[in-house]
Structures are given as C-alpha cells and as structure tokens.
Image (cartoon, rainbow, N blue to C red; front, side):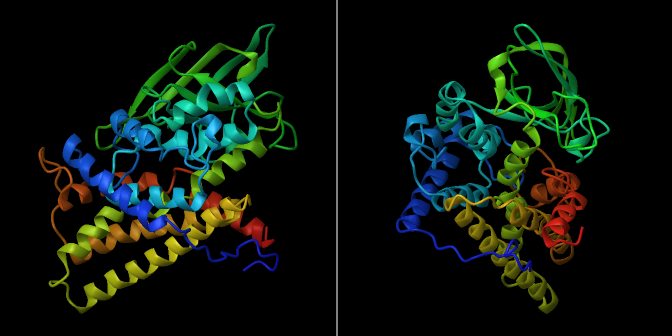
Amino acid sequence: MSTSGAFDFPPATLPDGAARLRGDVRAFIAASSVTDGWQPRSNFMSSFSAEFSRALGQQGWLGLTWPKAYGGQERSALERFVVTEELLAAGAPVAAHWVAERQSGPLLLRYGTEAQKQLLLPGIAAGETYFSIGMSEPDSGSDLASIRTRAERTDNGWSITGTKVWTSNAHVNQWMILLARTAPQSKDRHAGLSQFLVDLKNDAITVNPIHNMLGHHEFNEVVLDETLIPADRLIGEEGQGWHQVTAELAYERSGPERFLSTYRVLFELVQGQQSNADAAGKRAIGKLAARLMALRTMSLSIAGMLERGENPDLAAAVIKDAGNTFEREVVEVARQVMPLEPAREAGNVGTYETLMAEMMLQLPSYTLRGGTPEIMRSIIARGLGVR
C-alpha cells in the first residue's frame, strides 16, 4: 500500500433504504424479463434495448445522483451502486444507456456548460439519450497521448479530421464525446488535447461497422473529414482534455462491471455444481466466490469515495486490472469444472452453453476496454512512486 494512502480502500456502508431499493430493482427486473422476453447476458454491452433503458429512466434509476434540475434524483453514489450491481448480476439489457449514464453525464456535470447540461442530461436520465466514447484510434492502442485526430478553429466553430475506432453503438447512439488535438504535439504529450461533442445523427461523419467474432455489430469506426461543428460543442477548457479524459476514465474503470461481466457464467456454474462438483471443483469455485466478495468490497469502497467527492482514479485502476484477471479465471475454471461444449444454436440464448460460447469469444476484449493491463499497471506503478 502507498504510504500516502492512495491505494487505501476504506470501508463503505450502504445507506438506510438500500435493501428496499435492491428489492425494488429485483422486482422490476423480474417483471421486465417476463414482459419484454429478454434473456440474461453476461456482457453488459451486448444487449441494446431502448425500451429497457426508458423504463429504467421512468423508475428514476438513471442519473440517480444528479441534481433534480437535470433529471436526477439527488441520491447517493452508494444507492447507484446497488442499482448498477443488480442490473449487472441479472444480465439485463443495459447497453443503450450505459456509457451515457456511467461517464458521459458525469463528465458533462463536471465540465460542461449550462447549455450543454440542459440539452443532454435530462435525456440521459430519462433513458432516451445515448453516448459513444471517441477516444481510441487506429495504431494508437491504449496510448491516448498518441492520438492524431485534429480539431482546428474556424470562423464558425471547429473543423475536425481523424478516425476513431471501437466506438460502441455509434450506429445507433445520438452523441459521442471525442478527444482531439487542438495544438501541435510537444514534449508534454498530454498537452494540447480537448474534448468535443459530436452529433452522430446530424454531423458530417461516416460510421463504418466493425463486426466481432460473434458476428455482432456493436463496434464501429467513425471517420471525420473536416467535419464542422459549432463552437459551443467544446467541453470544458481548450487544452485541458487530458485532465478531463482522465476523470472520465475513472468513472469507466471504477464500477462493478469491471468484475461482473462473467457473473452469469459463475452463477450458472454454482447452480449446476451444488451437488456434483468434486473436492477440487468446490475449492476452485470457493476461491472465485471469495475473490468476488473481495472485489465487491473494494468497488463499494470506490462508490464511497465518489460519494465523498474524491477522485478514485488510482483505486479504479487496481479494480480494473484485478477485475479483468478475475473475469478470465471465471471462464477458465468453468471450462475445467463443468466441461460442457459451448454452443450458439438459435433458441439457446441464456443457457450455460451459450453464455460460455459468448464469453470465450468476447473474453479477449475485456482486457482492452477501459485500458490494457499494461496501462493499468503503469498507472498503479506511478501511484506507488516506483515509476
């Protein structure tokens, strides 16, 4: 642990009413799965349902911590943790609102203009306005400081040229927060970056699909070629994009989705092996359960940090790295303890065999989204003062 306390995870206690909120969310999910006929999915970004997101918004469970003036409920980050945890554990279809509510909205609350907040936050809280992330670029990997997308001032606003990749659901979302260079690269690689709002439906852009190994179209390439946007689309201060995007990534990396993406596989494994697993299998499952509880306690601690207004960027990097390792181990243990043949036949959505098939094909991406292990460990090393 750092002597400065940077890697402390102080205990956090759920507030009064959390148990009732959890029960309400579970009842809502159970009713929705019957009414709308959706099946549990482990990968929270693989199931886009505008109807489900709007229904969550009607319950007041999106933008839960935001001011009421922007459609929020002014409740605690710990209560939001309860809602998030239940949605992920149930494998609910949350992809439509996920990025917008998790990080785009909080970023706009912190750095956006009043006009930007009024325009966009109520729609996010209602489950009707969806965002993509415009960070990654071809040949850049997780090295955001190497991005080449340029934004140049014009008489009427900004002209942006560049390409973004892995922009989840850009073909159906309305907005993207884009990171671009507004000054030439210098010795300080983090200087001269800024963030912008790009209208995915109306700006002059090209969205090209990137199909994954499952054959699904979630990822996209977004191409901007001297795309003109109004001056008021700049988020925060020009040149402060690195500081802002670091805060945004802390929101992305700190939630329980960093270790619950394979929860449904673990749940089915436990259910299927209650009376069948041998001693070695039970030990393996027990170790996974213990690690899951430890990760949950750490993630709950981060929710407490957010509630106190702290920046959990270093702690979030620890959770993200440890969570990715846990997710991979869940799939490996499941293959050993319950070696059924993965299958993706039609009509088998939600079964253990289908979940395993999806996980085995999607697992490589889990270590990439939100930053690779090398990036996370670099952040941790700097926090420990050893780099």
